[in-house]
Length: 129
Image (cartoon, rainbow, N blue to C red; front, side, top):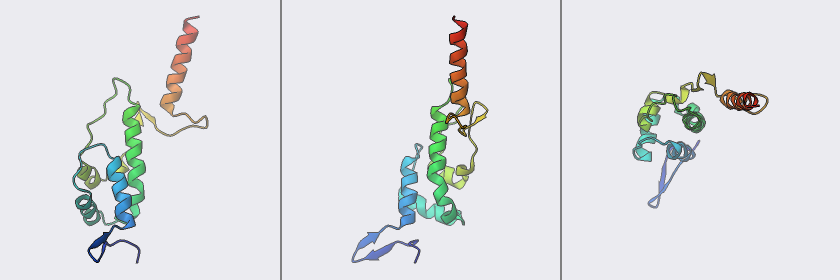
């Protein structure tokens, strides 16, 4: 038994580890959501590899949240999709970038955007001398 099914014993429903993991991702997602159980069941039906991708949901959502928070005033960021749409379109596979820069951090621990903003601040400071 891998915990993939919900068990009912004496009227008590035991939630599986998969459903709990999915619910953490669902709660983190800022867009419109339906009921957790409904979305979990639909996710499992539509995504044949759901067990394999379940671990990818939460980090992908957090990455997309960070991408939106790091937007410059003129950067376009689309509205959040409904969570069911996000799942159906496998949006955890979407690549997000800051102003054309990948979100990866360098050896200095900064993203390309952070490094760019730091460099710009230093240039302005030097120009004011």
